[in-house]
Length: 162
Image (cartoon, rainbow, N blue to C red; front, side, top):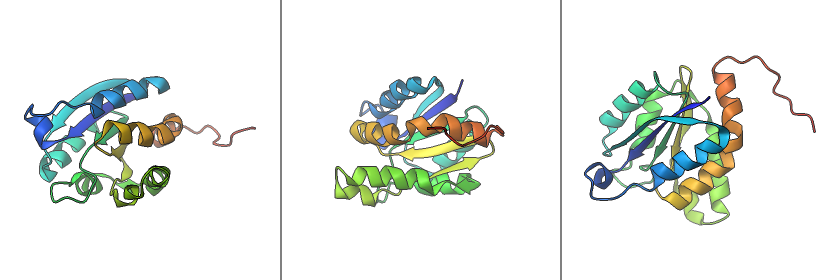
């Protein structure tokens, strides 16, 4: 079973001033791949805090999905913190999410989301809105179990038979 940590980045959400609906959306969706949520936190948009939390979650989860803080405002620092944590970037994940998003809105190209690996944990930044979470996660969800198997050293063949 894939162990998933959900990390919502929101100043207002962390103070209880806004209900987080993106985190629960992620939780519902990852159940489709047989994953179990082992951690769910809401923290403010503070780079050092995000970095520290990501590092602590790498010991507990196979997959960390962040939501929020991927835009261009001064408080959007999730990708910056993630880049400081990961050891290997997996650019195709963020690229396909942006590409898919462009089918709905040209603003998708403004996302700074990143994805990468630290140790045996895959970290992926998702946008903050529930609709964008659904759209972005839907396009990558099927590949996540295979990606996690590979990160954890699985030697099975990658080729798919049609």
